[in-house]
Image (cartoon, rainbow, N blue to C red; front, side, top):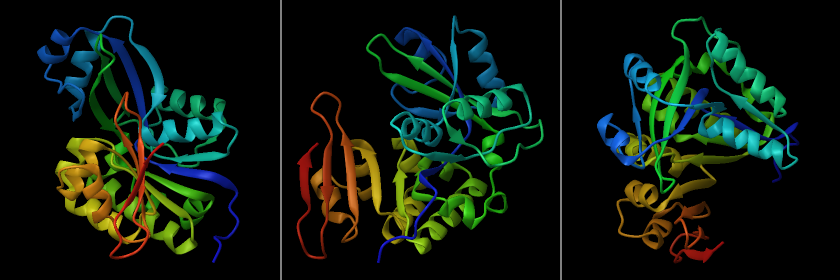
Length: 271
């Protein structure tokens, strides 16, 4: 049965994060406790201390789900973002930037404290990204801030894996997935980061098995989820009929895979 018609192509739910992007050397990454190539969570004092040491950091509205929504709009699609900002200058700048990109942001502002979340993104000379994220107001997004209409407004629901770091936002994501699945939307999940998979594996695995149609992951993330040695084994472990997608491998290019039915080997091909 075809899904009911939706007003937008994609609704993305995730952390509303302002990105602070700076070019640094690898010594700076190590000296300030970052994990090269990964995302770590930082306290508000830690995030403020590191950002004060950055030279010429570029500020832009970000977060995995918001970036996805902006990308959809840039390609001519229609998109909305579900995430929570504080009612502060950074939060208003975040919403303004989404609206300028053509992305709707229907979730109301939260109070000024905690402040709008931010992510410090350190870019090494080889272009590797290492991140410290202070979620701030983003971590206060709760199920009661959402309605089924927010979710079913999109033909595809995109869920950011980072939401599973906090119980409050995890419950919001699970509710959204249930509403999208019941509506007949395509429900997509990004595993976001190897640390995210390591810390939230059981909850993410349950979600993938029950609700997810389309999974985005790099090799380290997806093999960590299924505790396998390589991507093909992970594809074979995926629920029958689900699409296990986008193994990101850098220069060799991504691989797409789908397990078509129970008992079949996974089909995989280079994109």
